Image 1 (tube, rainbow, N blue to C red):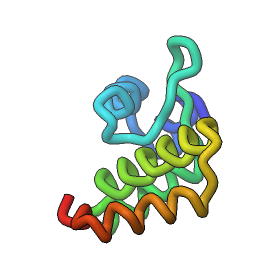
Image 2: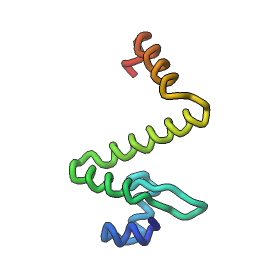
Image 3: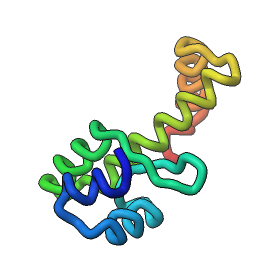
Length: 96
């Protein structure tokens, strides 16, 4: 979705959509110098706003997706990440 699409979908001014995307309040990504949005991310953001947890849950989802993507590109498997987390927990890493 484009800025205009999201603005229409949310009944917001396009500048508001751009500003919220730039600050990370609204989930989006840039292709070149233009903002793009995934409808599912926007729908989850809407639900989160209703539950007053939107900004945090969307950010956590985005961070988790980046971690997953980088892990896959690095050749890590689900099992190796799970093993790594087990080691961290056994060393008392669960406090961070």
